[in-house]
Length: 423
Image (tube, rainbow, N blue to C red; front, side):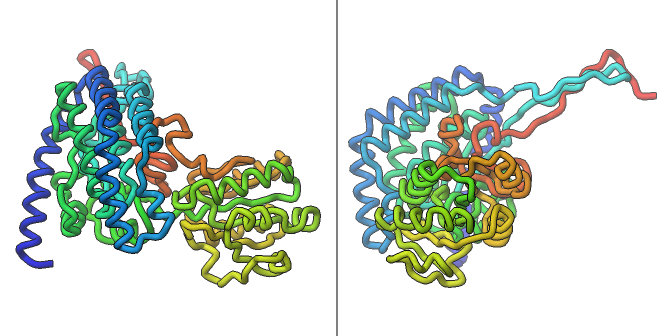
């Protein structure tokens, strides 16, 4: 990195960081009503500006095609009126949630006469680094604001124009509610030097949330000097148990893979119990191939017409495309062993009518999200009732699974005495 570029990125980070710190100090005690008003206003401005946002998105789509983005990545990038309606609905849903700041998590008295309360408090300044999906601009901004945090957003180069247009609406919402405009800032450049500057900004940023592919998340984890909410690959598995209901299994498997292939909750590996195979054959694979999915299989599964041989690295791979790996396993323990070896601790689903088998699957796997008879595409903060999410955290410290407003808080202890002294 050239010295001039370093100085430019460092200077920009310093200016944005100082403004974010000042905004965070004010947001920490901002009323729930003002935050609500800002989000409702932002939702209104996004909807009113939808034609301009779609026009900005067209510029990004042209850039993405020229860059050679895959169809699934272009799908992530695309905004139309329906998806903008989804952004608006997400903003309003977050606005209507209970404000987490100041919530008493626990309250107890001690023999010493002290009363102790554990109370939710904002994290401070959150840095979000994300790729392609412009809706993250609204989701991350809304959730951080709801939790009383300032946020610095660094969107992907592909979504630069879309994110800028959405961010302008978020700032208008802040202004309308009388909150500091620096509460939600967007890095105004595609310069990648700002990513490194954010990762090293320990003076200004309290936590970094990466939202993107393995390359981005790996870079953040390697280089960050700021604490990170890990959001690793979505290597999601669906296991069809011998006691699965066939029609439920057929619906779930097709949806888990094909509804949207470019999201982290898309199924990337299908595990079929030997008993299911003996009973039903390759029906699940046939269903997938009928929808245009390339099934990379091994062993007996290759007897199903249209399948192709899997390579060793197809297991444990996030395709984000119309491709799925498939293999036969021996019962739930075989599925558990496979997932432990190849999974990313994101989301796994078991298809079974056997309560004991489902309980074993839930007990012995430690992914952030475990499901039964449900599509992995439900691994989403909006579907969990959080309104939106800032990502799916796969680490084990502080937050796991969908990171909503509540997960973007810490806590402090409020201790009250009455002239109480320690003996």
